[in-house]
Image (cartoon, rainbow, N blue to C red):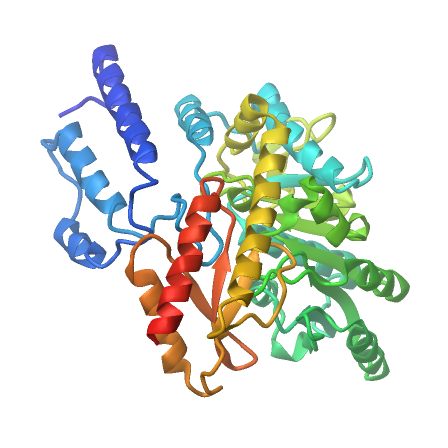
Length: 465
């Protein structure tokens, strides 16, 4: 049985073993199958059970179990994972996470760890500056886009509606991410408060429909308060007309939230900034560094134009905290979100940015945009395939050209044939009632060679059908 604080030699041995294992795992990602989850449930059942009471399990045995579990999954960190929205898993971020957990510093209140809070605040200020938000803006790192969206909805509700809010209405695209729907539900809104907006032929919000529905709601005595735009939808990567939506929001007194969880970090690129024109007018923006910055899952972010509005919506006082300082040069993050106990997330973002430099991330994102164009053009040359929408970011939806609209089975079998080779893993969705395949290129480990393999897999699967 290991003591709760192992001896120095034991810590070194376990640390070396873990680092060597992780290095080998990352170096093997190019050759790993893009998905290998078929035996995962069987393994899960075999390891089910309570922890050991006596601690007789060795570290090596635990590492063997971990390795088996890690290899019976979707290969989220590999170059062939092109399904859903990939996450990267940078090694330098993993080191930051290891150090942050070992140091175990609390950053919910700045007085407890001022310099640690400053490290995290450096990241937050960089994010605010990336979208040219004013000096009064504030943000925080979250567990992901879902929690960021939730805090944004709560801030919008508190700021625009006050305590009695059930006559409020909010406006979202029919392509909006499910986390927005969940956030509004958790914030106390029902279906009667929801207004789904029509989309144009590129699956972007129809701004005239937004104006029309706001007018109808005001005439009916409702209080429109929030519109959500997407800077990259999950289905197709569509970017809503953010500047036009911002103009409507400003004229009508609505809070404009931009869900940029998937696409937001393309703001680092010239093409991304062009496509996100008007995003600097947002009241709040959700970002996922575990997508566009290739960091470990569980790394989200929210930035809000009016930091005081975010704090007002979340802060409650407690007598037992009377000895601690209020926000000043540094924020108390616990006053800006639902979390009171929170981990030190800043290091896993700050360390990679410092070590690699922002340009390395910009170059990687530009490469993904180039790869997407290459894929889109290649799919257009496959006669059996239709590509209904040109990519706006790095998602390319497609389907069999001759399949009947109701013949989902043909496209499902098409997807199965593509994925069967194991070199790439794609996913599907439903768009306007049609079964549609999609490729999403985000991983920093995905390069031209793997996209060419993907194109060949699609071409072969289409001809076999």
